[in-house]
Image (tube, rainbow, N blue to C red; front, side, top):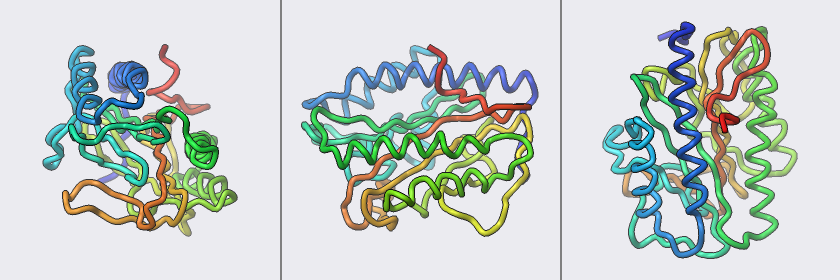
Length: 252
């Protein structure tokens, strides 16, 4: 399947979906503190999504049991919310969330610091976020998809971090995962030519240690192989005639 080009009407619906998701993330961020369980975070997140007129697109996606992916410390992505997982001072937590609004999906992730976090881990979170912005410098017509991948790799590699390879970004629209796949590490091929109307979920996932990961027995949670902390930063991005438009950021 080729990469879908969204019409003006579809782009408006994507904007609405993404604006609602940004609101959910902003509100959820206010609840991140020592003592809260990931179960409670998910409960709040699902309520916020529904209050915004959205449908949680992660809930029951291939059997995933929650609306918000809550990945703590060495958990890279797809951590399952649990009553017994209580955030404590010094943790980091990645919240990956999405919603469907009028048939259109949005997807974004943020890694939050819980209380007082070590400078080493703080830097990991900051570099992961900046890697996204380095990548989208190339999210413009005339560039190829893997220019984004290569820019992320070039930036992150200078810090010696592990860039997760088993998981990648993706196209998004009437489905949560559409073509193309968007790796965060250097590619030999150029990838598709970027064109206005493409909507992409760009999401660096970066480990403090090795890039290698393992899947836990719950069939969902992905952890760094060496148990080092992992950070995740994602937005849904629209390719325009000029600069990229970050649909899940800057609406408020």
